[in-house]
Image (cartoon, rainbow, N blue to C red; front, top):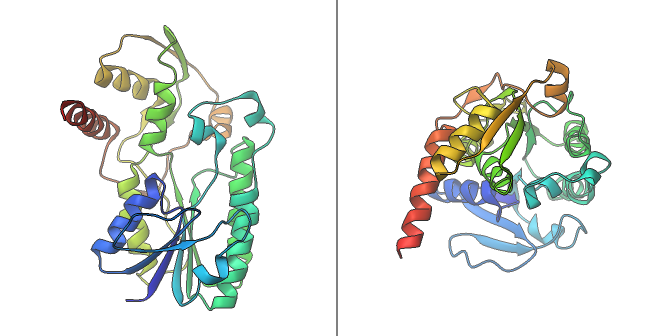
Length: 272
């Protein structure tokens, strides 16, 4: 099997992706800033934000799956005023540019880049950063693929959990179809080795839901009682905030399925 380098391999999507690659029998190396305890994969120490270790990490690599990103909103699970002004570029733009340069020097045969659905219309600085990184991939001389995904279930759960202190939840009544990282990982593995290149079909979840409905299902699953106050948005405003419905591949795990699975996992941990 050709060697696959995964960036972002220690994140939620990355862990699912590495697991799928290993199960399929692929030889996997992850780029990480710290040593990892994984026994089934190689670990190359390096950092996209600085370029440290990239040359060594790419030695002998056939395929790169770039799943690394840095979103302050996702990390904290909430939005701050600064997020409407700027977003860091060290990983998603500068890091992608470095990774592309080192990949070209190493003779990488496929550079698969993970991006986000609806970037052209989104107005948040993070979306503009993601679009800039994606454009670098498209302009590179490498054989490339770009796969855009909808927001992940775990991110929604994190952000809604941070609203727990509020008695009333004013949320946009905008439609979208969030997706589970396990479905995205399955799709990425398929696209990495099916011979296709270029802009691939985007991926979203199986159900089109409003954020208000998503919030209500979250509250039900967690046994919480809050007033959900749907806030109407124009189509333009909704798209600017990233609320779009993906028209590509659909995953199989719904938001309700994910909530139930997560709740069962939490209950099992509490009982140990």
